[in-house]
Image (cartoon, rainbow, N blue to C red):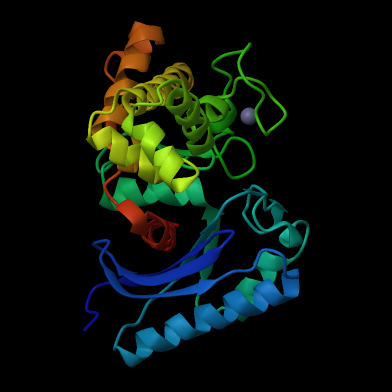
Amino acid sequence: MCDSVCAVGVDLGGQSVKLAVVDDAGQILLRRKAAVDPSVSADRLTQLIVAEILAVCRDAEQNGLTPTAIGMVMPGYMNRDRTRILLAANLPSLNGTDFLASIRKAAPLPIVFDADSNGAALGEYRFGAGRGVERLIVAVVGTGIGAGVIIAGQVLRIWNHIAGSLGHVIVNAKGPACRCGGRGCVEALASGPALERQATELARAEPDSRLAALLAERGRLTGIEIGIALKGNDPPACRAVRECGWWLGAGVAAWSVIYRPEKVVIGGGLAALGEPLLAAVREGLAEVGQPASTAAVVIEGAALGPDAGVIGAAATAIMG
Ligand SMILES: [Zn+2]
């Protein structure tokens, strides 16, 4: 059944761990998911992840699949050779522990670890919107903004295991405080919480709008409500998305003078807003970017969708 090469992808987040067996065309052959309680000890988390890895390997065997390696991605910072977690923002009990070594020891196959943003970048490079792109940035825009940079098929690792904290590039030095302690970071202006804050302000200012009605009905505005209002061309929703996308475009302009990408792929939860968001990113980029480094940058939505995490994790196993 599995004539082609396949690998196990593990996407560890703050709320759940998703696992899948993925073939070398990026197709998911089987999957598992388990809830993660971020308040439990490192030992308990390790036991859970090991049990899930063993279970997915057993599922694979029962289905006639023979994965050859495991890739696991998670947010936060690791050391340069990806053997130790320095900061696991969403799973604080793992900070400074031997979590990765313990997982490696118990895993039945060779395992590689990487940042979730690097996994997303490798997934898009190998299977998605970044195929064949020599200089690629893949940004994951959700609660935060992370990005992976791929140059000639290699993940760029400048600071520890990542290309840098691209979400914390400052685009408005007099802008709002960022949760990182900096000010005016692209993440403070263009992430999910920034969009929700902006949309809520605009909804309150325009009580007759669809967005205001959704706010009254549901108590808060998330990407889902903003997406609904956006589809109906509701003016405050359009304005909030345009503003958020514009600042993301300013972030892309800043990244472009450093990395000179040919293409920037926008993924993560906010990418579901689709073309209106991408159009705003292009607009921001064109308005503030240095023409020499940004004129040819292609902005595109991610192709892998909600499975990007596990597919990207498997890509890290397949590509190293
Ligand atoms: Zn920041």
